[in-house]
Picture 1: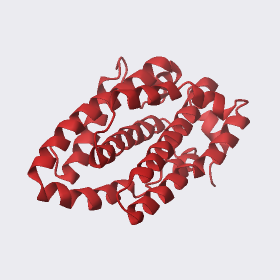
Picture 2: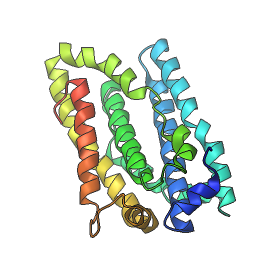
Picture 3: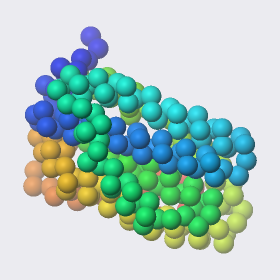
Length: 227
């Protein structure tokens, strides 16, 4: 039987954890939309622009679903999301891209780290509740798109490769800072994950940071860049 919203509530560490989790998912989807739409505006050709614009639109599809889940928990999705928005603005201020390639790598890194954060914390939802998150966590194909677009360029231009590897290291430091700040400012998320076995007892977030770092290294390796 497909999961219900009640299943999600019953498999979490209390209502506050549910609301903060839904707010996080809404924030990540909105962040992805914003980044992809902005990147589409700066894309070097029409084909890339249209592809990114379509991906951006797809990131918003889950918001209606998340809004219903939040409402059934007696909460407002947009209020739950609002506590995360300044984190994204701060990230943008700290990582202004110098050109199109840096812009693409910035979104690729941030998109990957935030997506991994979603997936790691969502491990606290058991199999009955997981169908509720399938649409939110589904692979959009963005990573494969960037690898196909940027990978050959990096392979052909060693100077660009070296520059983007340095840039990727800077961006991932800021992106991991987002994850750390999210957990610090929203303790219900960490209590939720710890209460459901997604975090080890006594873990202060170090294991999660290592998992996020490993995911980042894998993604950069796909591009032919050194993490």
